[in-house]
Length: 376
Image (cartoon, rainbow, N blue to C red; front, side, top):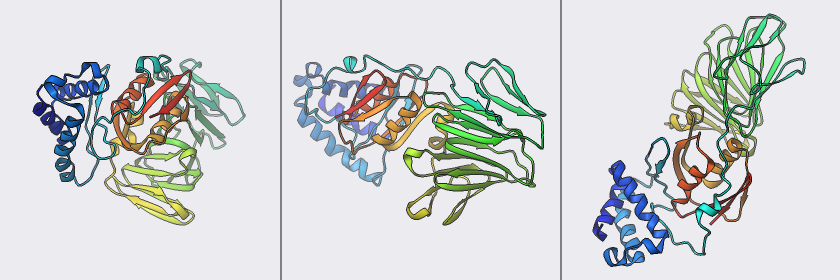
């Protein structure tokens, strides 16, 4: 490729008009920026001059986008291609210090969770390890039976006015778990999350308590509203029949409810907010609720569909998600200020996602056992 062809290719990538072949070509080209021996200076000229020329040509494109983060993503079975924008342009920065080859730093790769390691605790204190429990009926509580199907889904069937509270805990390093409650409501529970609920609903309302992240498809019953409560931060979500995502991980110190369809009312001690489809409510300082409109619903629910989807996320948010899903420890040796965009299936080893982030040359990683170190 000539110097001008390289610059035109960069413009296509940033404007979103590049084909799959051009995207791969672009990534392969910029991998050469990190490998001095692969750079054809006679054909392409000085690397620093080419970097400056690309930056100059990309700025008008970025300004036309009104400062928004531009991104795309397409992936195949064994690979993913991702556009990552850090400080305003997609480009490789020079590495200030020698860095060990990725093959050496990623020698101890960490695979995706192979199964679900959730624990079901019954009202009498009995604990059932769901990944080692067989399929079929797990336990009978009064008139309510609890079963597990071949896909690992837990289902409650039957009714009992004396039903007790059950709790499902999905630990770090676990695939999400799907459960059908006694009223037909379906809930997906993410890694690092818990759900507490009665084995059978009775009375004038259906109430469950959640921590972490869960996606609800609530069975409609106008005579028995559905309530989701969170202790930290203290929140109540009032539902009739709807689908929404609940997120309140302790390390994030905030709660966000994203509505997919129907309607919900989010209540805190200091505020109340009714949501419509495509909106979200998030806790803010002082107990206030922030209304967020035009939410990317795919991003909010990607986790239950088996995807990592980061859209302008900082490295701390990304690593917190990986920490829960892969059950890893994270150590920071550098402070990365850039924002990243990435979309990739969750069933890949952690190295594949880290490799996508490293393609920006804005951040690098080292894997040692179950510890990942963030380095510049």
